Length: 338
Image (cartoon, rainbow, N blue to C red):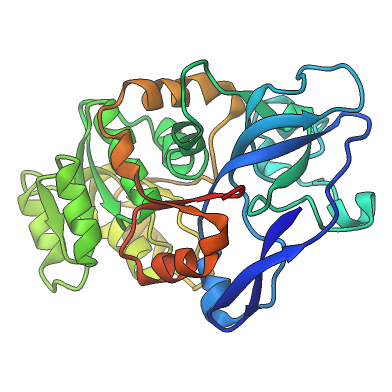
């Protein structure tokens, strides 16, 4: 099969590797759509990776024994390789599993573990059926496009009574707009890239502010009756955005962090958390028991098609990475067989 590899600084291409084979409850899925996420960072840095991608949808291509899925079934492929037996996995919070399988140790290779490829090998419990009539491209939005913000909003109880500040209008932040508007909440977006500002406005966001604006917090307060937003979610993955979320919410507000960031965040507990009475959560994805709710958003929201800006053949992966690195995109989806 063909899979994507980063070959050097800002260079990507396809390499040939053996097809994965099913065994026990491990199923081979032929990938039809592979959304791109943060992999462009490795592309820009020139990290020589050949296991790329954690989002995929496709059809079951091979099984080793009878089980939940048969050859030809259309499925969503959940990320990671969780153990399936710990308390988090059993509760549906598999993404927090501390005992993930070591794919290479188990299979002797990393081939078949990344989603930017023609096939992937997965335990069948990490597959979910795609509803009849839903396209592969739309089904792929159940992963990182809508998933992180959906889970975070469930954690902080976002509702139609709330105003929510969304820091960053990249693919994940735009997904937060879709999820917020689906429950009737009022989104306020903080974004500087003109393309993404425009896409947020196309989704019906009236208040879009520049994160570099020295009066940002004042403008958010002015837009929320002088007290600040009810909720805020960081989708930018930057310490400055994380800090802004704390400053942007009112007393007794709720803050969720879903953007990956490894820089320190400056917080003084008493004035920032205790005296404001904030609820602050970190959230990675959604509980698998909410999968049908996420699919309901995809079926019923009039905004979901705005989450995808480019669908490209995997053979054009160099162009796809350049687009992703430019930030002038929403979600970019690769088609592995084109």
